[in-house]
Image (cartoon, rainbow, N blue to C red; front, side, top):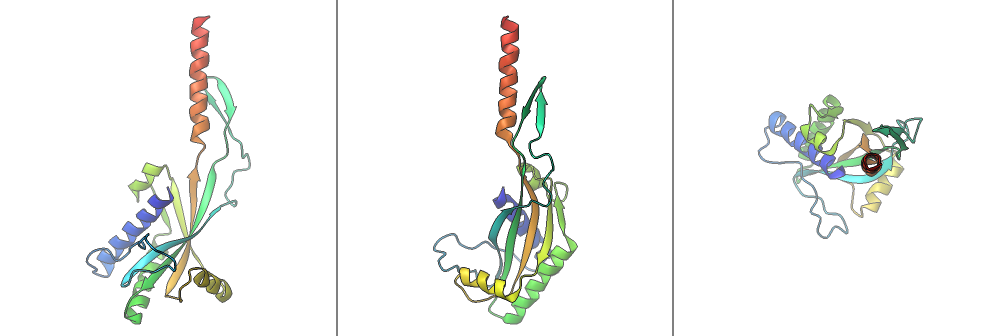
Length: 191
């Protein structure tokens, strides 16, 4: 699911660069997952880099253990988990001015596209994601330094975004309720 979200953002950004900056090919690329210690970002590209995954407790429902009813049987299911991703978009180019220019495009893109849903991004429906909310995060200099230090690389022009409301549902419990209902219905027929 997380990979799908990052792929959707990558594809949407690449479309935007082709349209607004007349870029041929893909400018937004993931890092090579080979030897990444220290992390090496692709030159002449924008790299989305996941730096944290956490639970979004702000939008958590008050009734954490919602019940469901399936064919007359009520059961509790585990609460949905709403995640928030912190994604750093790194602009690494040989020409520093070009790096800043393309970073500006990233900021403009997310300023104009703060929400993604299944209508604007059909690939989200494959993962049962209703909506993504994107917001800019401004880290204090000390925290920025810690991020770059943990990546074991020097600072590159970048911008950090929080991506909210990815929901993982307890589908196993829902499937179990369906199976239990089938067994009970079968037993009633036998009696």
